[in-house]
Structure formats: C-alpha cells, structure tokens
Image: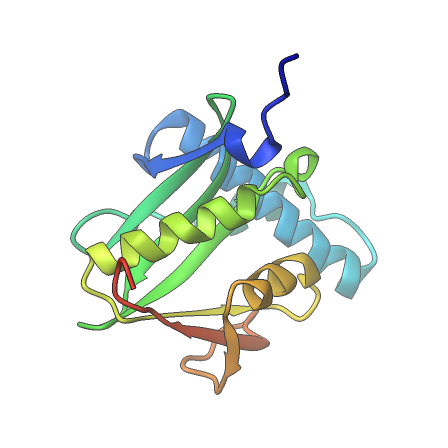
Length: 175
C-alpha cells in the first residue's frame, strides 16, 4: 500500500528572480488581491483596471534583489504558487513584504514553508530580526504570522496601508 504525500511535502521554496514572468504574475496577483480587498472594504467595490494598473506600477519590487533584498518563490508540485520578499532595513533587520499564497492552495502548508525559507534567507542577509507591516483586514496573513512566532510591535515606519506591525527575533541557524 502506498501513501499519498502530505500537502506540505509538495512545497519547495527557492530564491527567484523578481523580474521573471512567473514572479511578475504572482506579484500582480498578490497586488490585485490586497488592493481589491481594500477597495471592497473602504469603497464597496473592486478597483478598476486603471486603478490596479497604476497601483501596481507605483509598488515596485525591483529592490528585492541582492544586495538590498531577496525574492522567494514557493512551488507546489513544481508550479510557482507563492512568493515573499525581504528588504534590508539595516545591518541586522530585514522587512518582510509581498507574502502571498494563491487562494486555492491556502491551508496546504505553503505559508509555513515560505516563512521558514524567509527566515533562512534573512539569516543569509545577516539579519537577526524580521519586521513587517500589514493591514488589519488581512486576517489570514496576521494569523499566519502569529502562528509562526511574529509578535505585534510598535510602528517602525508609517505607510498609507500600515495598520499593524509585527516582528520576530531570529535564532541562529541550527539552534
């Protein structure tokens, strides 16, 4: 009798090229998702194609490359299905951004695999701490962060969509 692989075993995470077309598709899907949630909550409608195009263009991710950051792609059965980015804030701190798992694969362990890879990438950048900001309505993301040891912290920067801030101290690899 053979047993089926657990869904978390079907996820892999590697560094990706933020300019690659599959990375750009994921980033656009991420942006459209969070932007439309904002429009629905505050304006009771989806964003127009023009609003989404403008917002996406105004939210570049081109700094998610060495030496200023890193971009990670999560693959489920080999297909790119999730992403996350890190921006270097200072010598010991990185900012987590662009965390996204496609809706159809949420609950399969992709977020956990992504965050584990994020922490290893952060250590590789010399970071001892990860910080992030998010919105209160992004409850799935907030729950994911809390489950993985991120705690609410005071605001470390201001932004039009920053409503809650999280941080996590990293333990050395292998500890």
